[in-house]
Length: 114
Length: 114
Image 1 (spheres, chains in turn cyan, yellow):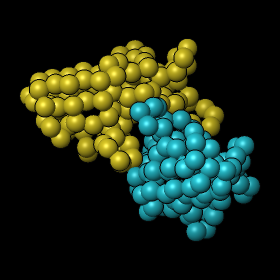
Image 2: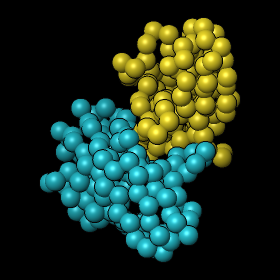
Image 3: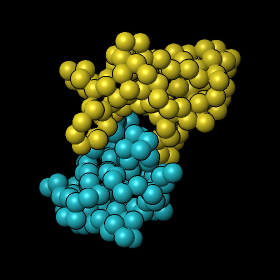
Image 4: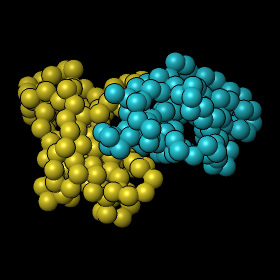
C-alpha cells in the first residue's frame, strides 16, 4: 500500500521569500510518480509539479522546485519568491501503475503574508 | 473542452434523502476517479473507472454509494439514505491512458446533509 505523509499542518511565509514544504512517502513499487497539487481557497485542485521516480534530476517549474530523495523517500517542494497568489493548501501525492490511483497526504495550508 | 466539469457545485439535502452527482471528464481521458475530501484533509479515494469498467472501490464506499460510467463518458455518483457523515466535497478527476499520469480535477460538489 502507498502512504503519503505531510506532517506540517500550516506554514506562513513573507512575500518574496522562500519556503519549503515537506513530504515523505512509502511504496513498495519501483516505478512511481510524485506530485504536488495546489488547492486555492474555494477553487479546484491544480498540478504544481511532478517527478518521475526513475529520473534522478529534480523537477523544476519556474519558481517551484522539488528535492527528491529517493532513498529517504522524501519529496519536498520549494517555492521561491513567494507571491500572495501562492496562498493555498498544498497536497503531496503519489501514483503507481500497480493500483493506478493517486494517494494524497493530508495537505499543508500555506499563507503568504504581504 | 474546458476541463473536468462537475454538477451540481453545491447540494444541501436532508438526512435520509438520495443524491446524485455528475462528472464530465476531459473528452479523451479514459480514466475517471472519484474522491471525497473533508475540511482540512486530503482527498480520499473512493472509486476508479477505466472506460466504462469500475476497476476499484475503496472500503470507504459503503453499500449506500454507487457509481456508474455508462459508455465510458460521464460518470454519476449516487448516495442513498444520506447521513450527516456524508457531508464533504466530492471531487472527480480524469487522466489520459498514456503520458504523465497527471490527474485533472473538477471543481467538486460540496454536499451538506442536514
